[in-house]
Amino acid sequence: MKYICNEAYKPFKKELNGFIDKFEVSGKVFIEGTRNTIKLFSLNNETVNIKAFKVPNIFNQIAYNFFRKSKAERSFEYANTLLKLDIGTPKPIAYFEFSSLFLFKKSYYVSEHLECDLTYRELIHDFNYPNRDTILRAFTRFTYQLHEKDVLFLDHSPGNTLIKINKENYAFYLVDLNRMKFETLSYETRIRNFSRLTPHREMVEVMSDEYAKCLGKEYNEVFQLMWRFTQEFQEKFNRKKRLKKKFLFWRNIG
Image 1: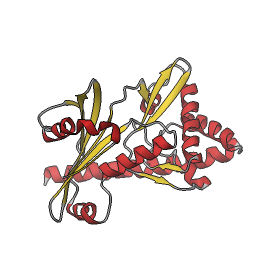
Image 2: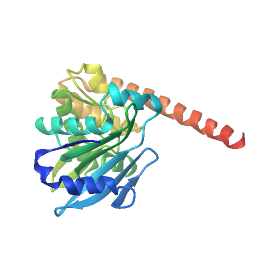
Image 3: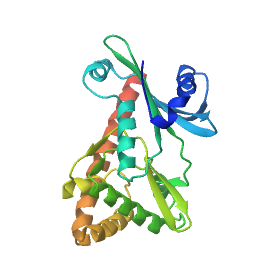
């Protein structure tokens, strides 16, 4: 087992190990996914969030064991990097990895559990959400700050930004961090980073307007590119969904 912990939580090594040892039979389920499971545990009057990553396929078991950092390790390291850049994310606590001599197996990422008021997803489904336009513009400025700090969040999608509201102020926190790059971003890379967020043209119009102001560019130029990238992503996403549906249909009648 590999165990790495932030300094402030080293006195709680025994408790953290206990959470991992009994993960399958204890803790409060927060998300039960097909790939990953998130459970909540109480530690020293604080709620901690533990994400258990699914055992990868055989090729990635070899890759993670010898050549690549695991999703848990990347999540932990990226969270620490984001905090150093003054970018919101739940506080990283620790990560655990389990492997055999040649194959990587389970991994866990432990972080602060952050209660939020909403995610970006609510803005997609509720067109009457209070101050929706204001929040969307604030989110766009937050994304601009990510780009200015050379952060490319590859999973910039509806459920991966937590939003806390404090009167008329909005704070944003990134989650699901294992796919990120830290590099100088081109103009097209910046705009493409919005493509996974929404299928709704009016939301893209608002984000384009606000991002154009941040960049000092013409609205039409930014919108045309952002909307094209959004449509390309939606077409690819829907095509993949149709193929999966056909595959499951033929498998079930086979």
